[in-house]
Image 1 (cartoon, rainbow, N blue to C red):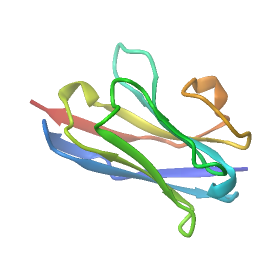
Image 2 (cartoon, one colour):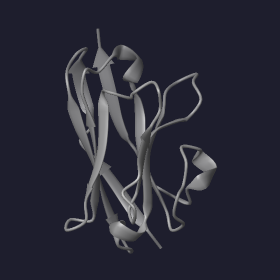
Image 3 (cartoon, rainbow, N blue to C red):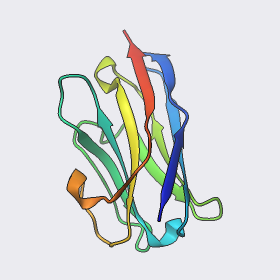
Length: 124
């Protein structure tokens, strides 16, 4: 069983930055596929960034590419999402996800384990 706990959300003005953290337990993050998804009211859940713990392969959604950076620290069993140049449309609940299988995508059905989420609010 993998448990995920997110932190780092908050309120920021447009153009600002936040860093989200996700602490994993129950399994080594280096052997997990990890991703960040977000859900905003009246919008579909969107995968924004993923990292393969074994290969280090990374991908981003077009909506955040160039602004967000996903990384992981295997010594802390933690994955991060550095969010820069934030926009009001980035406002959402952000979820950390994980799966034991490698080479997952940004499709939510690819992930078995989900955290409780952390709210990010960007004001204009």
